Image (cartoon, rainbow, N blue to C red):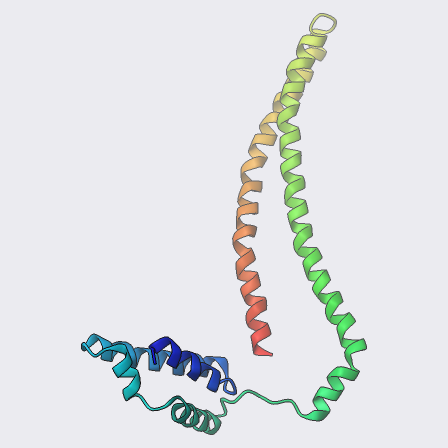
Length: 189
């Protein structure tokens, strides 16, 4: 039997203990096998020298039971209440999930709108140049006012682009952290 086969069988046999405890036990056995293999012993011989998967699993489960590391089993009444309460808790859960998703998407929509406003302000500089040439013959004051307003808009658009870009990058970097937080809370329950 190879190391991977041994660890896979042991992992299956340890399903009734908590994930953290199971991973700790698998990491221990993996390290024991690796240490022995570094001494020059072949993988099959090292695995053969270990206690059987059943014996190791029984010992680990006994220790986990003594430490309170077994997965909680739901009683029949809890399962019945979960099933009967489905019409109540599922819509609430769905509403909360969709609200969180909507708020997340709304932030991206606001960031996109800020990018569009920035682009529109930059384009206003082009409109100012066009306005300068259009009104220069009829009213020089109005032409230069349009040109100035267009340049000011372009400057504001360019100045606005960098902070909006930083906000978008920060929100994109925060997304995995938010997902990890939601995922870790899910594992607690």
